[in-house]
Length: 102
Image (cartoon, rainbow, N blue to C red; front, top):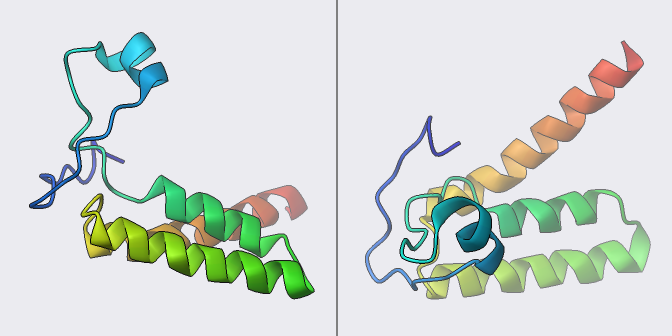
């Protein structure tokens, strides 16, 4: 989505390094600072929550809330990046189900 929504990094961004991306895609001299929309961490947690039930879902939702809080505190994403992740995830699940059942 960086090609569609290329946002500048938020102020106070924590410079993170992904060893696999540096090895295969970006190189070791470039840090990832613009690939922010949407939050892949949040999207993954929402995806997991969707497929759990009962107590496991409640625990997963609580952990998702903690993750969201930590992402916001660390300035890893804009708030919109985090809010868009559940929408994108649930929309993707819905679309996949429609395509499978079509």
